[in-house]
Length: 134
Length: 205
Image: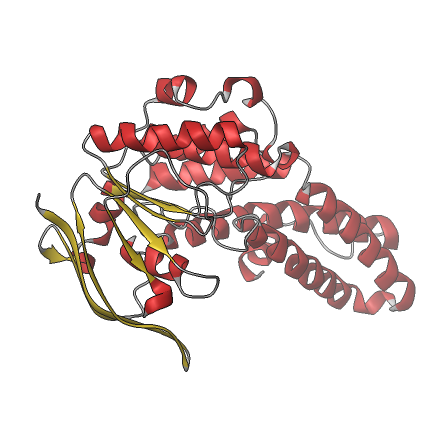
């Protein structure tokens, strides 16, 4: 099972490093939302702003990650593989977890940059918690 | 010849819409079996049911005299279903797609290189840059490399040029001679090089 998870995970990473560019997508979206929210919201709402940015970006990114598995006819590409396909869901969850770690780190840096002070502390537990929630 | 599949009184509904009703037929081992019918008569649905990919139907299917869904995973190792529209990971190259799927099947990679269609020239191209015909050839090459006991082809001649259609037709006979069973659906009125052992016509049910 771990072998299959590893294979699917590295396939996902390979696809992401190609033209779909979820990583670039995250960077652009996170920056845009952070800028928009910090422009309109007061500094005391910085944590709320952080969460709403993470929520919107993660919804879009999740949608893109799951679309990867669909072929031209909107069917699962691997639908006839001879094992339980729910393993793909587990692989996607692990992949999402890693992507959102990157996203949370990026957002913390962005908010601290925009607000010119350390409103959100760079804390490993906090980052893992965000990745776990989303 | 012994009967490989025995399908009895198959009924399929999509919600309240009837697709087909009371279809019964047998498929012999080492035969070429055709499923005929107009658009919307349920050819693909029937093939998916036989391939073990659609379990929402009434009736009985026996494979080698035992119920089809007793052990789906080991059954799926014996059959291979090819959809009408080839689906691959669009952002990966042909080789990367093969390598990914190779992890789940025991594929003889040399077979993909030496089989009926030449995939060598396009192996480094991304799938999204290929034509529908080239995708179809890759899909067929992959199926042949897997080398299952039962090939289930949904519209295998779609997107292929005349030359490739003839090559595939000849290959069907080859497969049959190598003790393989072939089930396929085809809507075209074009005659084939191979001899069809038996068929079911969904227009008449």
